[in-house]
Length: 90
Image (cartoon, rainbow, N blue to C red; front, side, top):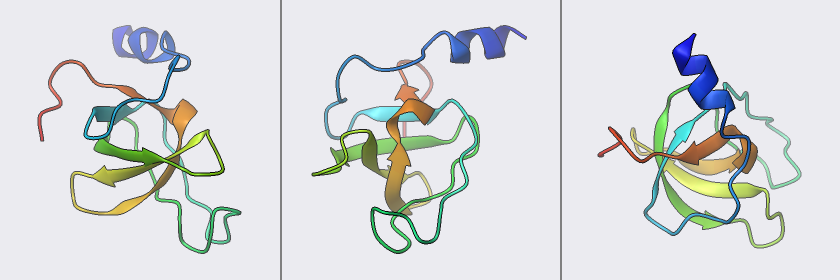
């Protein structure tokens, strides 16, 4: 219950995080194969997945390119992740 309150209290980020900033997934997300961002451009998220910010999408500001801790790279919706301040070392 406490984790739910903490994760849902961060609805959105006021600005795009810097490159190499650590992020954590707030919610599960299932990637769409035929995304408008390009074929296989998105990646799946599980709640509490940790990742590193690479860059925002050049045309879609609410999609961010990230690298997951397992090495996969792809776009995730920005409202599904938040900056991780504690316990997110790679």
